[in-house]
Length: 173
Image (cartoon, rainbow, N blue to C red; front, side):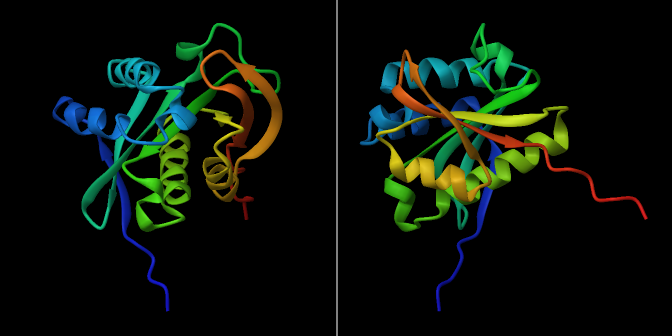
């Protein structure tokens, strides 16, 4: 019987910066974030922006990754085709390849998008995921994202633009 790990998100703090930098030095950063320098800049922007959620991913109480969601207007001047105004862009990185839990990215994304929809007026969550990072693409799919298009991102190169719309409210009785 497989046990599902306890995964939770907590707010990232300035004290977490050294831990995040260590994770950025690991393998997979190029595929996920376009390199440590661009990742560091993106994370700094997220942690210093009021219209952002910066989170530490914890598995069974131990920090294993970082995730954030930022109102898309903070990131880009022109939204990717198909991404609506009012969308938030999400991203994550894990300390090691799925931290020996192949669904950890999916669990973190599900928690993050749930928090975005519960605490903001976001109409959708979007992501730009390198086509070279199939593991991450699959995690986004399992977390409810769908593919919109392939685009050429200046940082990531050829990438999937993915979208998860705000869930509809349950029908009134």
